[in-house]
Length: 256
Image 1 (tube, rainbow, N blue to C red):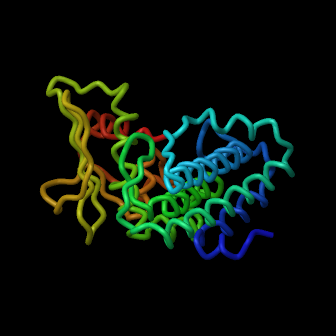
Image 2 (image 1 turned 60 degrees about the vertical axis):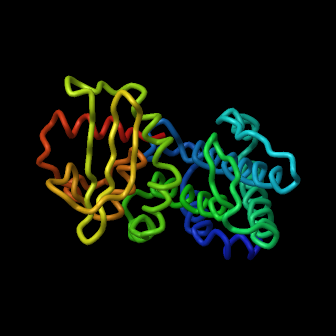
Image 3 (image 1 turned 90 degrees about the vertical axis):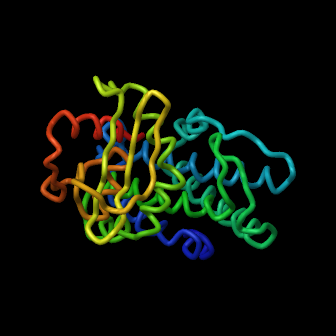
């Protein structure tokens, strides 16, 4: 049983937990390199690191975000120990974010993976991780689609995570003869998500719909694309941009 505070701060925790416990630890997932156990290890490390960085800032001793080696201690745990660790880390995270909410102005800047974020980021980012990695377990069920459709999820993916996602994707992308990749991800009734990559770097942001879209889809699929995922049903997105442009944009959005 998890503390009630976790369910208040991280409402996506319970659907994620049910999805994990309905599967065997070594079952495969839609994240091609990970099993269910790997997803749970990753989430335990996420909760720990988000809490560690925010707590250190509040103590006046800021720390840098560790890389994914932080997950290694969880890999030696038994399944029972790993589940207990995941639950405990989420409880600690909600305790820290609650304290930060009470003690710090919401616009307070804290460094996370080399970029400036605000205090609400820490709980919100764990919520996003729970939504995304639940989809890795379940695919396009109704719970996943509803969560991925939420506007805050798109805003967080673009404004808080988009730049490091693009930086990772651009590392191995051929910019082609023009030296530039540009893509518009469109969901009808909303602003486009505009992504670019050239010799000077990458950018991502919202822009009014203009001209043809590179990929048009529903909001849930657009969030999956931003994270380098693909919906189980490929007919939920469409494009007439042509293979070369589509391949370049999808490579840029290779995700984690």
